[in-house]
Amino acid sequence: MATLILVVGNKNYSSWSLRPWLAMHQAGIAFEEVVIPLYRAESKAALLAYSRAGKVPVLVHGGRTVWDSLAIMEYLAEIFPAAGLWPEDAGRGLARSISAEMHAGFQALRRGMPMDLREHLPSQGRSDAVAADIERVTAIWRDCRTRFGAGGPFLFGAFSIADAMYAPVAARFRTYGVPLDPTSQAYADTVLALPAFLEWQAAALQEPWVITTYSNPAPTASDA
Image (cartoon, rainbow, N blue to C red; front, side, top):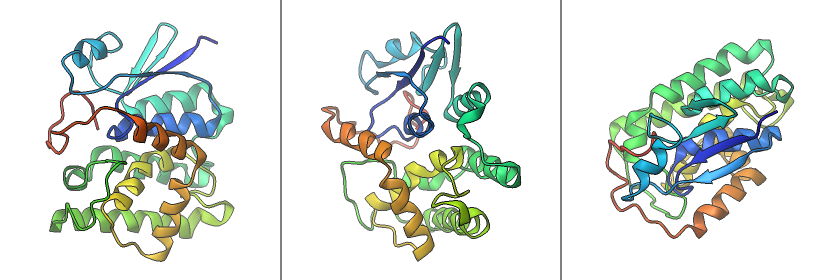
């Protein structure tokens, strides 16, 4: 099989890059990593060399290029069916639904609480819209854990694409000191303790790049 290459942005900030990276590590899928720092003079040209979309993440597999986090993980689920990236049939429809909801929604949370693994910003980013997003996320987590969590500590028991989609949110809740109910807190702690997440975080803490305008609600170099 051709080598898989995953192109990601700054690990401190790029929540969308984290998602497929985490899924691939958890599934034991070997790949080469390319990190392109975002919001620099050379960033756009470097991104366009891998994808005409000019955003991260990008998966290159032989002559195929797949961009967008969820599309990448769907592609991986197809070519590595034994990896179990989606749960069994009983929960698969729900897993796809909540992953799509995360992909398309929660704009207030994204704008108010951008991912930043180096910072601790308790009580910042709060608004009624952000509070509504937080309540919806935690409701999803409680529902999945109640219905499907008997087989393990993740949303559907075993780790799945759904967990990869919500991992950056768990990181945001920690950064911004969001108080969580016991079920949601236990789930967030589980995700943030994953060896793969800790590896990503360690790399983020060592990055020299700082994006001072990252709170801009309309980033252009990344889909994060």
